[in-house]
Image (cartoon, rainbow, N blue to C red):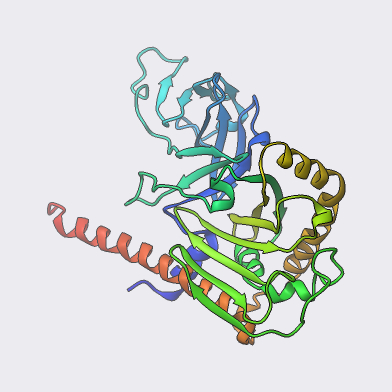
Length: 348
């Protein structure tokens, strides 16, 4: 049986066997980029065709950071001694030594990557799930019927605070009460959970399309959250303003948030909306996001054991249980596999 602390540690670092957005596309150009995600060190780069690759940020020779080296297109060359590692984690060349036995060995961890909707997604698997699962994004991102604008930010808090924040529709009526889009609606509400094929929706029962009135959680190869905020016609075409959000752990004390702002429009209508958003609304939305950041970065130390949750917190409580159950299942599967290997290992 996996102990409680191991489960908590796994959730805090981030569940495995899932895809996570790790960088906006614009962040990776010519030079290799070293990053930390889920407490793992990666280096990300583009080859000559613009295809993104990601491997562990470690040269197998002496452990120097590959991200400090040179981009040779389909491989990186370590700055320290020139060892060349490709996108599969295979050593292609050791220029300092003829016929070095390290050449041809796959000794650096590689990460499957996809570039979608202006972001680079990487798959983080455990020892039992090295091959990536399928990734299906929420409709707002997967469909060509929607315009999409990515908002990316770094927050100095564990990613679970960001997830809890989105799974809490009532905070919009208080924290964001002076916002141009969330200044109306009831400050008291009854809430309910409703199951969906991908997860569940947590929503107000007596108010819709007035404020931040519902949140959807889904797991479809990645963990995502989705919500909609009503907008007046004067704010542009496309109906309600949607947000599809992902929170990616950096380590246990830092995270990245990827929020795609969406509206259902295409063609020249989409162009009009995107122009209006950039000119009139983007600054206002950054102000709202900044309010979230300030609150979450300044939470009391280790608040969860002393929380007093009530009915409005049913959604985040359910989501916490889902994440903990998935972490426990992953750890138990690894323990079972390790026990089976030990049982069948030849005697010394």
